[in-house]
Amino acid sequence: MNRKIFIGSRGSKLAMLYAKKAKDQIVKSSDLNDEDVVIKKITTKGDEIQDVRLSEVGGKGLFSSNIEKELQDKNIDIAVHALKDMPAFETQGLKTDVFLERNDPREILITKDKQKLNELKKNSIIGTSSFRREYQIKKIRSDLECKLIRGNVDTRIKKLKDGIYDAIILSYAGIKFLDFDSEISEIFSTEKIIPSAGQGIIALQRREGDEETISVLKKINHNETFMRAHVERNILKVLEGDCETAVGAHSVIAGDKITVEAELFSLDGSKRYYEKKTGKVEDFSQIGEEVGQILKTKSNNSYKR
Image (cartoon, rainbow, N blue to C red; front, side, top):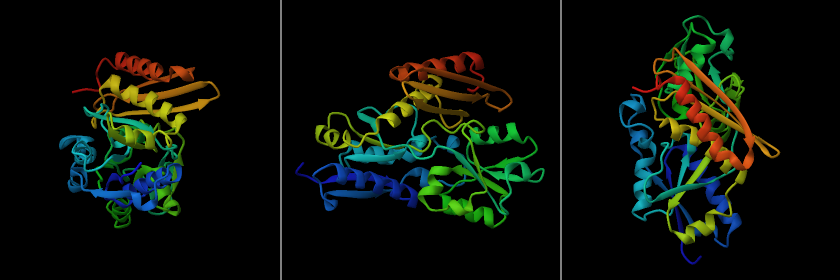
């Protein structure tokens, strides 16, 4: 390749670390030098609007639309996203089909005094911006109160230490990247709290037909993560999931088998629908669609307005 590659990323510290990881892998696997791969910081509407739920102001697209526009306008060649923050359906003319090896997908709890979830006092306030996390926590401890929290990891931890919340729930992947492991009070198994579809996965998006970029990206795609991303995201697609859809999905591959488990909550969180399915690894795409359809049927669309 005889031109520079431009990578677009959100400007948060965590997002820039994700972009740096993608850049390092591109440089390592190609004939490009460090100066040939340039990271461009892009401000998104999701970063600017911090005081309301995403579902009230445009959904997950708030984190990706500005970056995707830069990609469509050919100002960047690759967009870096946290897969869990991407809308279920692809933007026309763009393709997300390269994934770096998955980071830890589990959820973690941070409390002021290192208490675990079962040690928190009645009516303790849990900070989360996710309906899924709220309903999953209420399933375990119905006596706790969940309140909206937005902002990057540093901001959320500061709000906790300032006494606005008694505990916050975050993804383990982000905490590890930022070296905040010492703050963790409890790590939840994926069986106890099923994470968001694609949680812990860094996704790389490009323009359809951009053969030069495709040739660079295909060398760094992690195949197992690719399959796990698709089986989980296909559940979302069948459900037409958005920010209001309280759904968790997590998959594992063992030998030639792939297992995915998912749970879906009704709109008010009062009902939970669960499904688990194992099949041949080569059928990963179909398995995700089947689980999504089963959940959709079980719920009778009670998860939608």
